[in-house]
Length: 419
Ligand code: GLC
Ligand code: MG
Image 1 (cartoon, rainbow, N blue to C red):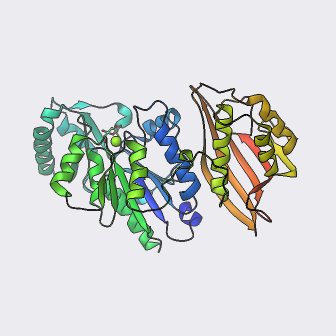
Image 2 (cartoon, protein in one colour):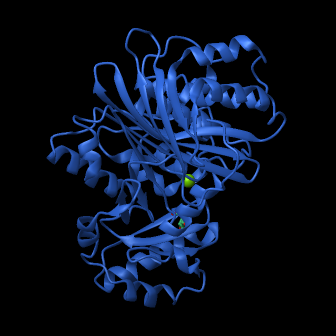
Image 3 (cartoon, rainbow, N blue to C red):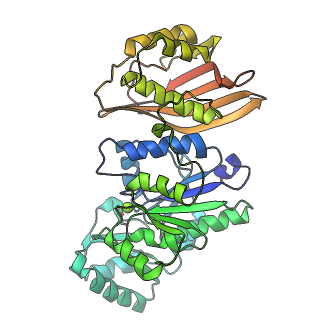
């Protein structure tokens, strides 16, 4: 696993989160809690922690969600209700997990038996996966169908798990599958490699997340907007477990609340800090704060002043070069003069910037190679570029920019660009 190479010791925090209605709030068109989380994660956790997304969605619908919402890249993606595990940006599948799930599983028998239940309405073809067969079923029928179905499948020699979520979805999986089992499998893998996470936080809102909260030693947060079936599971099975919190905030804000509640690390997002021009202690925080500053400048949320521009120029080496994604090279300080032109040009618009997958490597004392992707969202339009910079923290409290090289990311719209 390449993730293991990135971390040279145990992850400080392994955060395992469901997506729909947990990390992603579908009732928040501004995506404010998700953006708060992204900034917090990239600034304080990306360097030594692990982000795991665990979703009911198939890879197809997961990729679609990533295009719709400002999401950062997880280290591990668990999809199709714990039946598919992939690693890294390139989503390399875990073949060992597939092998394991083949035990006592025969998808054809599941299809044959479920077709005898008129109450079960098959979901879209994309959501039918090698180890997951999914339906819609009305709330009042869910219990009786589940009982009858598990009986017939057992009689046919299958060992399955049936999960009801969101008051509508019914998934049939191998018994060894599910979000909880997938997490247990990963934890065991890290243990074997001698790098068990120092803390693990599971985050969810619906029925298929319940198992995440039963893994020993794991902290859990049910976001404030959790579904009835999850809250019911909790009151029947885990009411006295102090490691499980029902947050008072929705979605990603509930996750941040839980990080604070369980004292798992920094829980103040850079987006919640009004003056970010304090001493920046890490290149990660520096990158996140710089992107936020640029966003505020273009939204006219900071004062338009020469002092501001001078302040930014001061953090750039006089000889620093910026290579623009179009390929043209500029002296960085001169290039910063173009800042004046874009003050407030996104005022009143739905304009956001976020950085993804920041990786900082120290090349020599105080000299850093910093790579990240920078995303810009304006209404429906999205642009992204990959950025590679050299930063220096020698002789100052700041990380000064020595060199920046940007390239457009594939499938990103191209256009004018400011840093
Ligand atoms: C996602 C999947 C769906 C599944 C549901 C609950 O919505 O797309 O197939 O039934 O999660 O697990
Ligand atoms: Mg959910």
